Image (cartoon, rainbow, N blue to C red; front, side, top):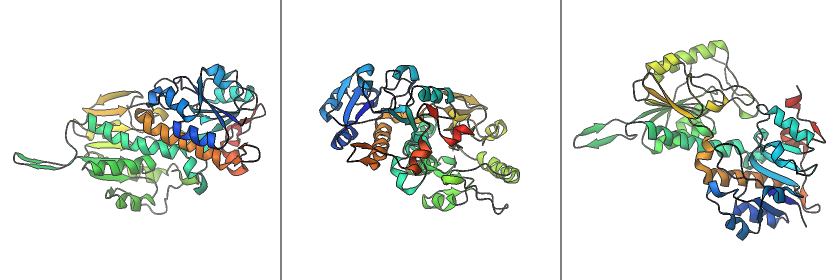
Length: 375
């Protein structure tokens, strides 16, 4: 029998996604693997147990699924106690939040698991299809616009009627990564007048290509804002001051603002102050996609929609989970693309190389081994 892959039912509060779909189950079986799915794993993502059975997997309780499993797949990292029966040396691949859940990582090490944090996947060309941050952020950017539209008491597009004209909503996107680009595209599709900003000057062309207006500080030269691996870095005080002044004047005229700025392993940068919120007209909406990392918006509350100065601030937790069927499909493909890329036909199992393996491996041989957790 080939490698046994266990698919866990997510236990984190509000998590509706699942780490495998019938599509990826079939593909893994095609590689020679045995698939075991925990009962009910896909229900909240609109996948019945029978669909996994039809795809060739077994469906059982967690204990049976974990018994003899060589690879454990999840969306979020499981409670170590809930996988205590996993065999020594088994791989655990999921989004493991190593900087926020260090004790859990230590527990994985103590249990002898080889924990692989999918969110640490290097941003290199060959790993694009394995990048869970990009696949999930794409749909988060889309959902953020829909959430804003649901809270906004007016229409998005300009409408010309016999009774008069309705003006287009003005939407401002702060942070033009994967989520920001999709937010721009979605707001444009809905007919809004869209503008966007980012600390990386290279994004200006991307903003223009989507039909939006770039809002950039032009007076301070030589600040690119591009960190390693394509991530944004924090800016100098001069740039931050100039950007804050430019953005303040722009924000006051906006109906909807969506913030998407994240810095891996660090608290989210503060982009919007209470004073800037107060400058917006009543009925405006701000969506903070970074609320779980500390928030880009002063006063944003994770898991709540709050109102300040007549402005609604939307802080939904786990936005990808709000589109669980689609985000699960993409997450599952990321995991399959990752494991299949390293599949050794002779061994009938994946064998990681150094470039990707060393980047995402947190624990091995009973120890925490990732350099980013050892400094």
